[in-house]
Length: 98
Image (cartoon, rainbow, N blue to C red):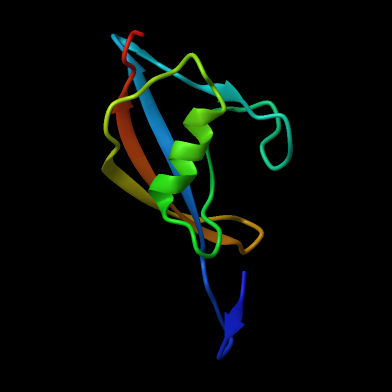
């Protein structure tokens, strides 16, 4: 995270709520922080990316999953004990049975 005028910018994350009928795709996190916790698939938005591009790239990693249009449905403003700050955007999409 960059500092400007002693103000720390929050990191921006994007997560996907991928629905298939009455199921939601989740995965177990393999690295710290929160290793082995269950989470929605997602990632950090890098410079030059849109949050939608992060999710589209993630979905392409699973060739058997085809999805409908992404819709931003929620956000969280996250403050952590160790002083880190991030914001997360949540996108909803439905699986299309191919």
